[in-house]
Length: 219
Image (cartoon, rainbow, N blue to C red; front, side, top):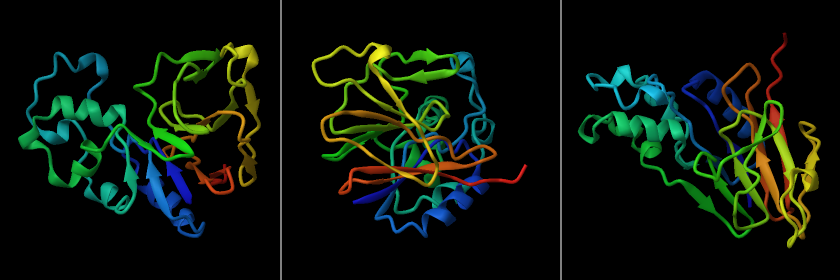
């Protein structure tokens, strides 16, 4: 099974449209979206004091953003959870339901797919690089977003602790497949769709490979 994995769109419809145009040429069975499709305009520190009056004060009303993900398997991110906490259920637009009501994770025999915000506290393993090092997951790989980096880490062999010194950082070379060994587990940070160079990954579960991609926008 080949999946294209996208995440962290944050309301950027144009970037998602551009990324999916490339994905359509990559012969994948399905798109998996790891959440933060929408962008909440209310910061997390302001949620408790926010008084709801209009939906468009909380997030942009752009049905096309969700329409682009029709047929995709979507999981919920922290942006969707914040929006749901702020907007009363009767006021939520029907077009947003596929993302606001999505599950928190998707599992196959090969991998676990989630946004990452519900995992145990992340560690700043390098300056500016955060990693869900202590995550407990099923399968060979944990695919996640949340921290906007394209990064791949090989965890220690079973039975060893997860000290950062024992974790291997696997170089990410866009367009080159990386084989995920059967006797190890991996943390696969897909990278964000939103941004100057929209990113995503293609996982071939049968071949046990992951390939990172991004759109190169001339500077």
